[in-house]
Amino acid sequence: MAEPSGILIKGGRVVNEDCSVISDVYIKNGKIVEVGPNLQIPAGVQVINATDKLVIPGGIDTHTHMELAFMGTRAVDDFHIGTKAALAGGTTMILDFVIPQKGKSLLQAYEVWRKTADAKVCCDYSLHVAVTWWSDEVKKEMETLAKEKGVNSFKMFMAYKDVFMLQDSELYAAFAQCKEIGAIAQVHAENGDLIAEGAKKMLSMGITGPEGHELCRPEEVEAEATQRAITIAHAVNCPLYVVHVMSKSAAKVVSNARRDGRVVFGEPIAAGLGTDGTNYWHKDWAHAAGFVMGPPLRPDPSTPGYLMDLLANDDLSLTGTDNCTFSVCQKALGKDDFTKIPNGVNGVEDRMSVIWERGVHSGKMDENRFVAVTSSNAAKIFNFYPQKGRIAKNSDADVVIWDPKMTRRISAKTHHQAVDYNIFEGMECHGVPIITISRGKVVYENKKLQVEPGHGRFIHREPFSEFVYKRIKQRDQVGRPTAVIRKPYEGKVLSV
Ligand code: URP
Ligand code: ZN
Ligand code: ZN
Ligand code: ZN
Image (cartoon, rainbow, N blue to C red):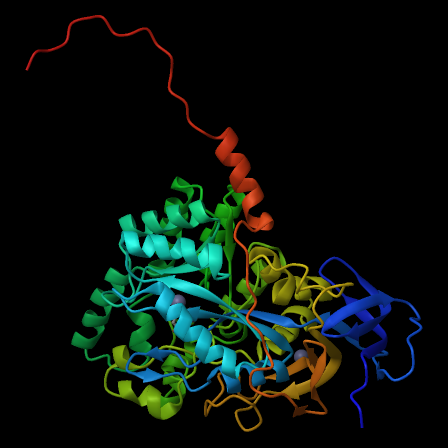
């Protein structure tokens, strides 16, 4: 049988970040062709009845590390399995990180990652690039990446001492270059020196288990670095994006900076919104180790709810997952020393449901804010809106039919990820993606995935995102300090 020429989604409630309306959506050749009531479409199209369902933009996960080589091993979710799992959870695009080793070319690392991902991705993707060392060459390569390679965001690490960490003067230089080329500076905000000292102290006290991971880097270690990054970014008038905001203290720093008028965005992740750091004290070592990531989840059990409140009120802006999965035997590399437990957790499949459950079902945010924090704001900040993050004519046909009433129970037994446990094990979530459409094709339906590796495409992102840079440019024009005009000093000068 010939492929139907297009898809008509009938009678659903179309939800964008600014409004919801009952409407039909007609999709053809990978694009949304028409949105409106009672669309009259020629015969031969596939019709999806979306009555009583929501029709939302596919989720955009701003933060993944598929198949990352890290801490002596490699993340088990590769670009194939990881993006398939994303689609099953209602996410139709990921932004992954190129992380070159210190001293290595950013461009070469980018090309390697493109080649790896292009062949395997089942949904669209884009790439942030990490700046792990500083030189004139790095500075030039950042420009090439922004002008020619579709990269408009660079991540700088303030942690992972001697591995990825930059000094403040290097952060200053990198942020200044981001500003020059119209990119967004992203930071992993934790004080790497304090973590190194804290880890030594815990080990010397005989604390070798996963609880040591949190104890050696308490909230203030994250909050201090967050404040420092904001200060440095402000000094060069560079927009700042704080990845994986994990604590109440760091979230407050971001929120206060926004109130002070800073152009700063905070990204909480599914893990931080859906679970907490009390798990590090679990008696079962494997359970506790499964939650080890940096910055750590926080033992204060009010943290997830607090982060969700800030996300609902725009103190925090959007969500990723930091999906970087290591199975139990990989985590066991650190069975006698928590500093050797590979850092990372799952989330790419469950983010949408976890945020619906804890955000919308709980009454903290409405369906429109849900769309804002799961897709539209990402597309705006990273400059591909309204190509994605919106259900509108001419937007990409990345669409999810969402059942807000249906529930599902998260489990490693049923998830599509390669990792052999799930940090949300047993959580019941309202809000289930029942159909996922990627690039105009139904790729997930009736709990079945039908998609081939390479179905996804790289999304090229231009610099100078207006959503981020309009204010920055105006401030440069009006905020320039000027010298005071004075008569020359004509008195005595000490002779030396
Ligand atoms: O624990 C984490 N976050 N692993 C991935 C690397 C990073 O810092 O994002
Ligand atoms: Zn990080
Ligand atoms: Zn990360
Ligand atoms: Zn519930």
